[in-house]
Amino acid sequence: QAVVTQEPSLTVSPGGTVTLTCASSTGAVTSANFPNWFQQKPGQAPRTLTSSTNDRHSWTPARFSASLLGGKAALTLSGVQPEDEADYYCLLYHGGVQVFGGGTRLTVL
Amino acid sequence: QVQLVQSGAEVKKSGASVRVSCKTSGYTFNRFGISWVRQAPGQGLEWLGWISPDNGHTDYSQKVQGRVTMTTDTSTSTAYMELRSLRSDDTATYYCARSQGDISFDFWGQGSLVTVSS
Image 1 (tube, each protein chain N blue to C red):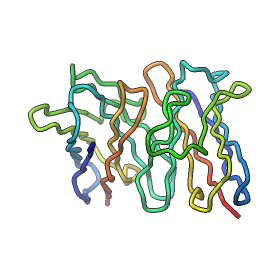
Image 2 (image 1 turned 180 degrees about the vertical axis):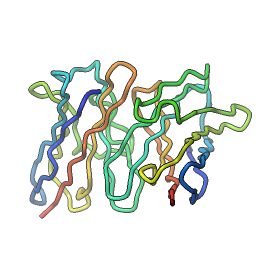
Image 3 (image 1 turned 120 degrees about the vertical axis):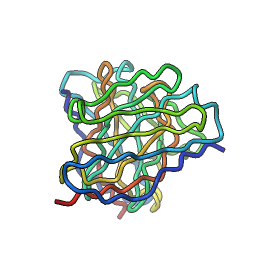
Image 4 (image 1 turned 90 degrees about the vertical axis):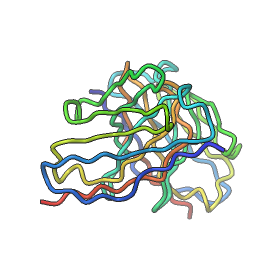
């Protein structure tokens, strides 16, 4: 089964920009992996930010942007807010099987 | 508005089975898949599988294949996930999520804590 890798932790200053990435052990991530990105805060259920590469949901702030970058899926946060401090997970489709990344803990300091 | 409301917490003995329900409302049930995800305490998310309420098609992760069954009741717009032969490492919060097929997720349930004790 594929292994999906994310940065374990990142730190960003308020108002700054940060990019989280999501790599697959099977090779370059493409649109055929239909990347999903999720945000999870302590004690809460995950919340979907984007689906299928960059389908932002109605509740997702415009500062969140998903893309494919250098063979990986990427989530860029521009103008980071204190409330963006959370765990972020990507999910990649591998032919009938979905695989989550291990998650990135984003600290806003 | 779209809602997914899950059943309450369960405590089970090793070797037992558990069934978690996910009652949906606010949309046409047959038009979207239901995916199941779990999260062990302090750990990341793990995809378990999905079901199409339209035709009953399922895909399961290799890790739970053979122990899990996902079903739906279209008359009540409810999805179910049954996990058998429970062991301690099945202790987790189980989530259902609405999905377009098994590709794009959007709405999530609130989660159901399943605790397996020996």
